[in-house]
Amino acid sequence: MFRGSLAKIGLALKSHAWKNAGSQGLTPTQGAILALLHAKGTSEWRLFSISRALAVSAPTASEAVTALVRKGLVSKGRAATDQRALLVQLTPKGRVEAEHTAHWPDFLIGAVDELSPVEQEVFCRGLIKMIHALQERGEVPISRMCVTCRHFRPGVYHDPDTPHHCAFVNAAFGERHLRFDCPEHDAVPVELRQENWDRFIETHAA
Image 1 (cartoon, one colour):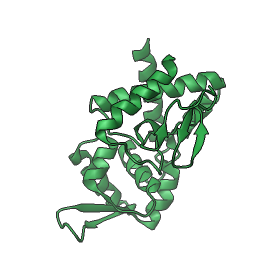
Image 2: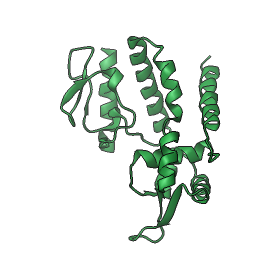
Image 3: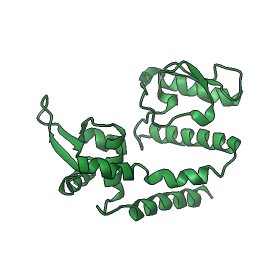
Image 4: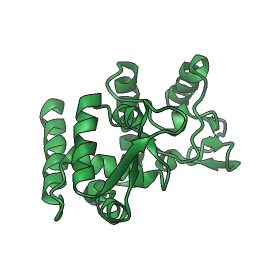
């Protein structure tokens, strides 16, 4: 059951990415790189960091970046402090294209909106658990989720609608507001990561 349903969602994502490749004829990997650079603003990214963030091999990332350079969407150069490090940055043309690719997954939001608030909370928790399992197996990189952040305080309030606390903004929040890629994310130390996760799970076991 799950194998078939997950395969259909994966197929929908890939199909939508190809359908929205635009005039540049971007591959899903190329689009993901543009979206990643767009999310980080004007900062330069090392090629190694891009491959890790997207969970692709270094050769795959290098090939995609080379194609983006040919299309005039990114530029690359050597780091001043380390000539061995290759830096990648969006060009003005690339920033325009990245605005488009950053919204490729948005078509799924309409489907999620069909769920009730309770179903959305359950779905959110399920996604977090799936991503956590993939991270533990080394199949995806550690993402900037609330549950891996030092600012996250899970289950500190009795209110079921807002059981968690974010120390960064000093506010309570609920399941539907858990973030998967927070720009203010500050990774919890490795030795405390499991403790953070266990407290989050205990919140729902109680």
